[in-house]
Amino acid sequence: MQYQWYPGHMTKAKRQMQEDIKLADLVIELVDARIPVSSHNPDIDEMGKNKSRLVLLNKADLADEAANRAWCQYYKDQGMFAVKLDARNRSGIKEVQGVIQEACKDKIERNRRRGILNRPVRAMVAGIPNVGKSTFINSFAGKACTKTGNKPGVTKGKQWIRLNKNAELLDTPGILWPKFEDEITGLHLALIGSMKDENLNMDEMAMELIGVITEKYQGLLAERYQLDESLERSVVLEQLAQNRNCLKKGGGLDYTKAASLLIDDFRSGKIGRITIELPG
Ligand code: G4P
Image (tube, rainbow, N blue to C red):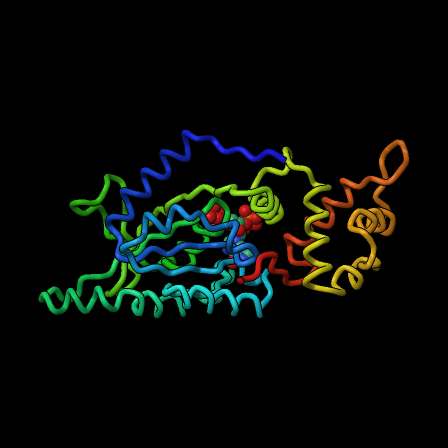
């Protein structure tokens, strides 16, 4: 499969982010909890290298709970802060408030020693498209928060949202573009719905998904679709087409329809809570 982004947009977004990041004490990166590796763009490591880092494993409601915990530990081992989150249902939001203070403790202490009191720490949100940045900002900032307006040194049009007396959040997130380092990264991003389905090979995506689920989450496919998981992936897909009566107009099994059905069920969490990429 070929994956393409538009270099013009990417360059502009990156430049914008480089500017914004200078104003922040803390970089809050959202990744998709189902694919924390593929939904992370390593450029942010370079851009945020002198900042505190908080990783939010968003859409944790769709991911495997044990894997969420393992990932949180993984990031902590790397010296970052991490929280699992369901931004849509606001689950985990409270914890984020506390962790922001914790992550900026050194900065607050430095300010205090220099006699600067009550200066809120500033955080900016970043992540690849569709990872839940806007949902998070809305859930987190809530309606009650006031925008603090433009301030000197802030790019025109930028607004800081006062979260509480200790923290402010930049209202526009930084957009990172996925980095397709290999075919698998592209496949995984496609599976979670990060790319327009029109140009994708659904059969190939379904095969990858069947492989992951039968290997790491044995029994889930057998239970939901009455499939024999010991068979080859292509045969499993064929069985699914049969069991769900996916037929082409002129007759014969419609594998692509079966693949779409499987992928839709995965994306909406109907098959179960599945993490495609595990740490280590
Ligand atoms: P972005 O700014 O990073 O591009 O992402 P955005 O907030 O627009 O969220 C993308 C999609 O992900 C939205 O769904 C949003 O509701 C969903 N989403 C965000 N956070 C979570 C989460 O923690 N769990 C789950 N399950 N979903 C989440 P959508 O289908 O595009 O819109 P809608 O169905 O909400 O209208």
